[in-house]
Length: 184
Image 1 (cartoon, rainbow, N blue to C red):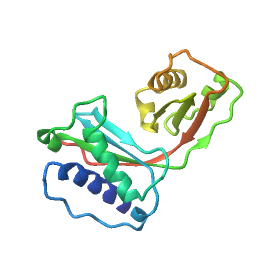
Image 2 (cartoon, rainbow, N blue to C red):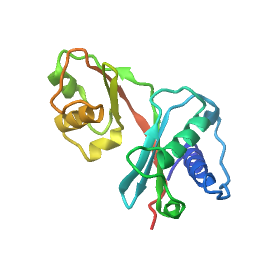
Image 3 (cartoon, rainbow, N blue to C red):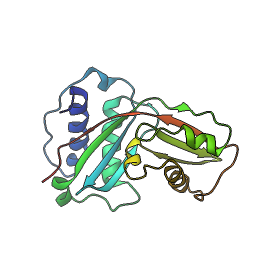
Image 4 (cartoon, rainbow, N blue to C red):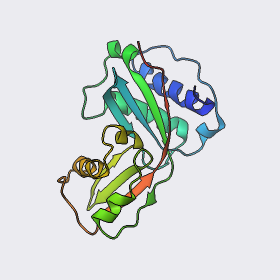
């Protein structure tokens, strides 16, 4: 089961994607939080495999607009995938992750930083001299070991897996997430 906000976000995400194909929208439940600033990631999967994931790390527009924009971006502008085709829509599962504001992680060195990561809880943003990468907390399911998670995050930011510099910046956030039921 999902709560009212989750249902409202999932329907808006699906409607934003379906609307690009001229599909009539589903009725959209309302929620007062939709008018407030919010940051979401929209993740699309097919048969349990990633098909697109785009989002906002900071709340810079109303939640309603953020989920719609990121849903369209995940479906049509994720550079890792071809744009979603209309015949894929029915088998595509939508997940929406609502991010808490990111907070800095203070650390003495790389070992200290890795030790502070909380598997399954933390989403992590790594920044270094214009390079940036993030992993949602859901990534811990496929990379449960802290050091491996961190090495892959560095690679996502365009850095070598064994890279370290004292001026690396790390932030953590948590998410509330909602998923559509599994497509059969």
